[in-house]
Amino acid sequence: MKVTIIGSGYVGLVTGACLAEQGNHVFCLDLDPKKIEILNSGGVPIYEPGLKEMIERNRAAGRLQFSTDIAASVAHGDIQFIAVGTPPDEDGSADLQYVVAAARNIGRHASTPKVIVDKSTVPVGTADRVSAAITEELQKRNLPTDLCSVVSNPEFLKEGAAVEDFMRPDRIVIGTESTPAGLRAKEQMRKLYAPFNRHHERTYYMDVKSAELTKYAANAMLATRISFMNELANLADLVGADIEAVRQGIGSDSRIGFGFLYPGTGYGGSCFPKDVSALSKTAMEHGRDLKILNAVEAVNELQKYILVEKIEKRFGADLSNKKFALWGLAFKPNTDDMREAPSRVIIQELVKRGASIVAHDPVAMTEAKHCLEQDFLANPEGLKKVSMVDDPMAALNGCDALVIVTEWKAFRSPDFDQVMQKLTHPIIFDGRNLYEPGSMKELGIEYYGIGRHN
Image 1 (cartoon, one colour):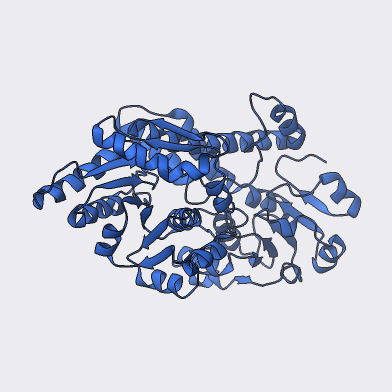
Image 2 (image 1 turned 45 degrees about the vertical axis):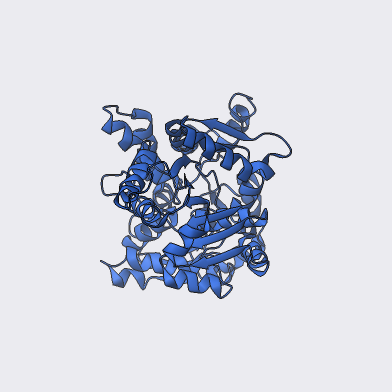
């Protein structure tokens, strides 16, 4: 099938590459010429395991192309995926200007029937706005308004495992209208996703608004579990309980399960913070205050400071002349995504207290440097207190303690003898509970986890 992907960012690139892998001819559009230049020269502007190799394979086979040509992109695909950004607006709602602009471009150039797929994470009712924008452009050209049909097909990709998630999905959600055009669109989507349903049917068909809400509901539920566990972990610290034992005790209940029950320094990334906020905003627009989600957001923001509080409690409020090694900058492992990353808050707060930071991340340091430059615009002198090194062990040299923020596998089994030799004090603040407190005590390491009790 001929497919166009509008937006060659995280979701667009993964979607385009994976659909090309199944034999479709995919045209990826982006209006950023630098991004298209990188892609056409064999590079990939984001880090995602397996993505670069898949893009190279399908470009070589002639099934995947990248361009800034809007007219060509509309002409190419019978199915047009809108996978552009929906950044949070100042009031917390999703900014749909790029989605609507993409829809208008389709309406301006379409001359044959098209299925328009909302792949971006969008609030309930966005399909109506997309349809209205396309219809308005078609009417200007005296073309039938049912030339295009809008479908909701939200993505459920985990950064760091997105290719695997797309190729072996646990579910595919497709929302269509019950009109003749909607039924034709449903059939087109069924054909497109048929290769992913060979083992068993994974597709859930529903109306458009239900599909739109499903995406937000899924992310909000996962974010809720994370914040709930973080609150319990903080309580465990106060009462002397071990949150790991609690996690196993409740996770073994089949009604609860173990997923997303790991306490830490709070969630980040492009999805959870934005989607929880947007869902709350949508509810407010309809006169409903989602109190649980408001609490989820509040808990998460506070949790980003939890390691700073533990460091301050151990070393005092004045951290002048203190130096900390920091392992992990990305908001989660296997990605270079720094959006809403807890490391950004932790670094700023430690510097504010006078500390110096030596940081390491396996893939995110280039992106981290750019983000920290923005974070320290009002305090350029503070940025001078932050340095980055390519080797995690080199980050430890002469530091007063190690702070772990991201649970990269490379950090799980370090040479603890080396760690102790390089640190001025054998102290670890573990924001991801990578190590067992008892084992650390035996080694002579002063250990502070999240809700862990020695």
